[in-house]
Amino acid sequence: MNPEDDDLSGDSFYDAVRFPYYQNVVSHSLIKAQYYHGAKARIAVHNVSLSDNGQSSSANIWVLGGSDDSLNVLMAGWQVNPAVNGDNLPRTFVYWTVDTGVTTGCYNMLCQGFVLVNPNIHVGSSILPASIYQGQQYDYQFSIVQAIGHWWVRVGDNQVGLGYWPNELFPNLLRGADQVAWGGSAQPTLYGDESPPLGSGHKPNGKPDEAIFVRNIQYIAPNYILSIPTLNNTINYVSNSSCYDLISNENCSFDPFKYCFTFGGPGGHGCEASTT
Image 1 (tube, rainbow, N blue to C red):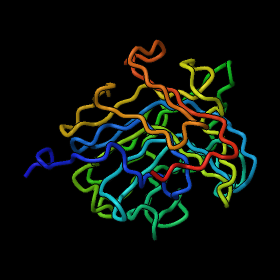
Image 2: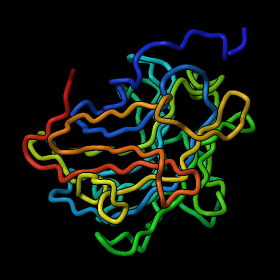
Image 3: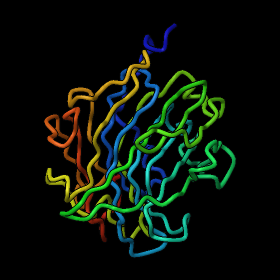
Image 4: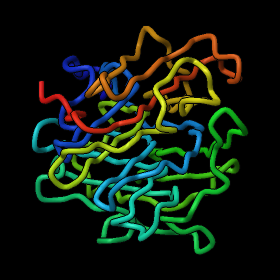
């Protein structure tokens, strides 16, 4: 049976992507209908301000396969995470888990799993300059691609191979991903009483110099052809719309494919992620 023949109908976006479960997530995902071999995008970089070292805020790509406690997840993008990086700078990051983060889950090179192949580019490198609210914008290209039997992370304008996750680590991603998504996550303080800003710290209003933007969005179809999403095959998910939001656009003036979205929000108290 070809992977394309399998029934992949179901939820539009796994609730389990909200691991740890108290994280807020804002995502723009492909509807689960076929197997995908990767995703890429240019993501604006912001030096978001956190109020506590236990917080983190990211903008990233997700690749997912499986469900419930057997969910395999790959992430790549930029993140402000003082607990991992020791500072408040936006830095590249990767993350993986094979069980929704129940017993596995690792950032960067903190455990075995991700194989670094480029001695000139390190996971956790700072990305500067960062975008300025209502000013100059800077973005950075990321991709997660299934190639040569593994899941590769490529970064920058030239899509330099940063490293890969061995395919055999992820039984539910062997033939491809059930789903890919773009967006970000905000991890609150330890007791979840204050959620950090996401993106630029401002909710989207369609202006790319105010909320964080994601452009040049593409996914790799079952035939390994780069494809552009449409509003008909994607769905937005916002875990707490009081604090964060997302606006997608098929007539994006600052994108060559005319397809982009903006997202983010200020966070704050009372921003607990929905569990429904």
